[in-house]
Length: 322
Image (cartoon, rainbow, N blue to C red; front, side):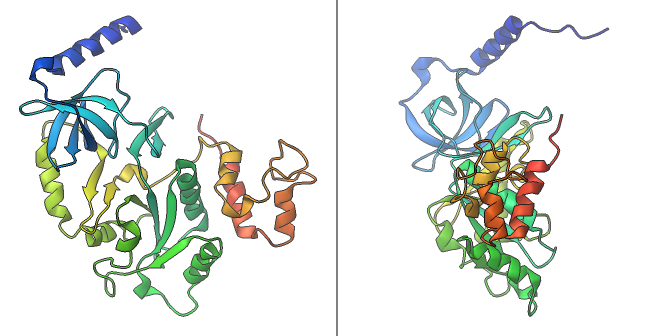
């Protein structure tokens, strides 16, 4: 027999009942305090206050979905707490869910490390997609050339890296042999919240372990704190860097699909396009074949490279999911 479909009113009543089940009497709650979400699991979140104290908290019904990095106002009880509100996010990383709807994965990120290496062979278009995603999310992007000990003379990856430094991007070259503690990276990351992105095999996990030497201990402590054996945890988790700053680790924010971005937003993610945007003959110029296109004219003059222009076209021309 087919399962009976609930009406919207019935669904709201069920959600409200579940919320009341988790709520605590107001008299048992302490004064409001500020905190940051360390991890989200089910209908609860692990929150840390300014003193480093952590509590499992339930959420008020009127709060939008919480993710690692969110700043919240919460009130403690004897053993747990209640999240009463969420501050406005200064930046947000999202990904499509199974239905194609964008869902936040992490919040309030300042810095994206785009990691690549001599092996596996890097792809400029993938790097460009990360850079566009960073620009759209309102965060700084820094290129990290990992495994530099594998570089050979005239290695093509060096030319690729230099093409991005020519655009004004910061480049850091590192490897675990000559830079075992990621000392070249720490000053850039200090007092900021960052994520690492990059194709599989470039050494992201190794780099995270170099940034956080006791990561295994912290992962175990976090798992115990949120009792993962009984709860389903979202992918994103926030860890403090020993030298200052935070790192949000999640497989869900290491890959980016840009199907949701309109062409003009993609164009704004290409730094060298900025001085030409808005100067085309036609306001609705698609930067493809139109007469009087400022982007195409810059391409002909060599002010925009063919590789980057083709990368842009590849992104905007990619088939959108149904």
